[in-house]
Length: 346
Image (tube, rainbow, N blue to C red; front, side, top):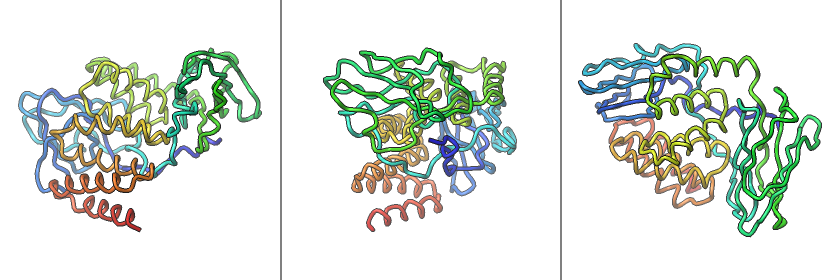
């Protein structure tokens, strides 16, 4: 397992920020759109985009450098690049046009949920897996991939356990873990390679923590802080920490589509398409006012169903996404989605 292989083709490589807080209506016009359209929290911004918040709106954007929070002037039109100029950045654009292999589809095996295809900030990660029907206990083994040997082992009754931190997970070393249920099934039965993890190196860990400690982040609403933190984590490939941050808001029944959409993207990136589907469907319902937001989610659902081998569902969602981009006047995405429908017919 080599975590250097985690990098995937960026969904967009020139994004300059994300809307993380909005108290009232905000309109967006992209360069290739025919008109302004309502948008919302979680929208990714690019050079050339124009934002127009309502006169009473408080709209905050986390810039792509991870540390700058831009308050968009209310009641007037502003270029996104004026608040978040393009720069060398810590946070990449949303990831993955690549459709990962099927994963997490067999409920009878304790397939790995977290940490999975990720870097880690935390030296005491929560190891999570699928709860197997009828299983009463599980044997969990953490593997040091550099030595191809068991680093730590335990037996538990639940479907998760906290790694105790000893032996220490060394920075720069690849690890994985194996779960064996007393039903005779194992996480090794999942047909998906490279599910390991590695701790973030010291310099990058320091950078992440320094951003989170900045006053601008502490002044955000709690949910905006969570989104800002998740986007920062994603930029450093800290997928597990991003998932844990957002799932805390799912447990609080968040009504923000971006929480569920981002979780869907994270689970899609690590190959857990069934979990991605659940969160995307919830995000789609919550984004009812946002034509582009629904179109993006519909395209993602098309990818998920394509990965799961359900061509008919994939086709329906690609058509839904295309229709949204038709309304926006975005001919580039209309063409792309029509190509995907053709590929499904081949």
